[in-house]
Length: 164
Image (tube, rainbow, N blue to C red; front, side, top):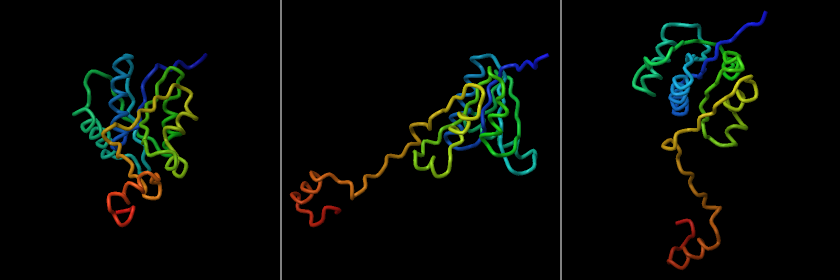
């Protein structure tokens, strides 16, 4: 006898910008598929009512409140985050939704990435939601990376130093 998993959408809940974007996408996907949404908060402390309030506050920030149109399950799990989310979305017909921080390759190499780790561990489709465009900060141009044209242009404009 095999265990039948009813499909669901699982989303990791935190109140970062990319986490809130993932929460919005997960709600839309759960409604579109007609399946329950499992909002999972991974924390190190023992479960408390405040942990469930964190989930509700994330819904308030992302959507203005908990949506009534979908079946919602609030869950608490323990770290590591990627392993907990991949374990919760155990069925092949489930969908795991995670936020992508957008901090770049160096940050990912140094500190790891929950979304990339979920992609490796999960046995179901994983949707990595990119960071919202408004959260992207343009990178500063480094003075040592100036092109030679820029150096000459600064000299011709009468600046004493190319870095002024």
